[in-house]
Amino acid sequence: MKFFVDTADVAAIRELAALGMVDGVTTNPSLIAKSGRDIKEVTAEICEIVDGPVSAETVALDAEGMIAEGRELAKIADNIAIKVPLTWEGLKACRALTGEGYMVNVTLCFSANQAILAAKAGATFVSPFIGRLDDINLEGMDLIADIRKIYDNYDFSTQILAASVRQPNHVSQAALIGADIVTAPPEVIKKMAQHPLTDKGLAAFLADWEKTGQKIL
Image 1 (tube, rainbow, N blue to C red):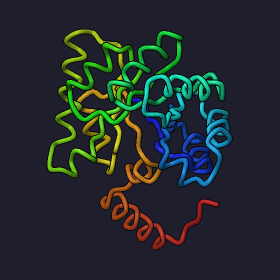
Image 2 (cartoon, helix red, strand yellow):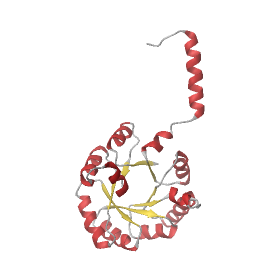
Image 3 (cartoon, one colour):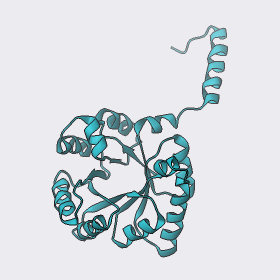
Image 4 (cartoon, rainbow, N blue to C red):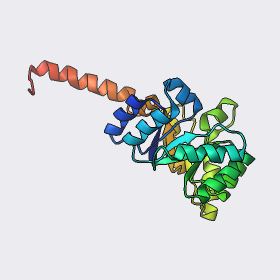
């Protein structure tokens, strides 16, 4: 499974990239706003850190506007993936932009039907939102499973990018189902290393070591 980091925080991306935990980055208007920086400036810096796809999102609502904005965003770096919403206009933009050779991430996917349309439109990635479905008492992982089965049935090449990840269990569950990629905030990725039994075991080892009076250095 590939790990994308869902942030525009350059320092966090650098830290995770140094550990080999970053295969790509996803951003959106909210994350850009949170960074407090110019979209082109911060996206260019992220693209210098990460070799893999960096999703930069359009904000127009019509296909013509999305296409124009997508072309402009793609000028930032060769590894830009243009992000468009899963609307009818977004699908039109996806078809046009993938036809021009750009990577396209179709975002805000909440149903298997939407995912089929994204694949038919040539999307490089489709981003089903797990957490937001959970928020309304639906099973976000069921959607990942449905898309995986459909895409495998018909050999669709669109990659499933599990998004709206809120907790470490979302990552392992998506991996078990077969999502190609998961995008998660830096803090969720870090929490994957945590376990109370690890902490308990380490404390016991250190207490026993202290009794020996020894030093390694």
